[in-house]
Image 1 (cartoon, chains in turn blue, green):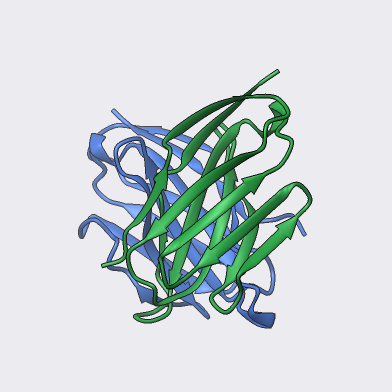
Image 2 (tube, chains in turn yellow, orange; image 1 turned 30 degrees about the vertical axis):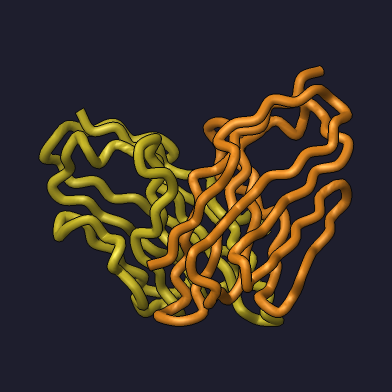
Length: 115
Length: 113
């Protein structure tokens, strides 16, 4: 398997612009997680899905952030409008509870810079 | 509210030394605990996962233990190598409220050749 795929790897945008981050989980995994990592706050869970349904979005910072999972092989995280404080590395991860494994596999991340 | 703390924040050791990284959590109602490694500018790689019913897991030179009652886990690295230099993070997944995962801030390890 190719692992978790994220795109783009780097994104530089100006304040106020819309940003869309994309993720393809590992085939067969039924959990998908979006995380944000900053020096100040470490790694934070933003939202996670189970079988394409959002389960917990309490980590989403505000209404400017939204996430969707239209099917089992694709998810997006959108920021509209973007602000400089959104600059961070955004990770997507996937897992499955089959066999009680639950190991989370992370993608390489998207480094977002908002100017 | 679950909080995860890792001590020390940074560690520098000579090659060949055995070392222990610590992770503590405030709520013992966990589903599992996972140790990750993160190299600079890269994503996280899972090292070991311990289910709540288990006491330890081993993989090669790595051994992770879990004491749920005291809210502690340790990651033991035997015979450290320069290639072990990375940041190590522990994460606990809650047993209630939807399996939310909480990460510690990590321990940055540097192994000197």
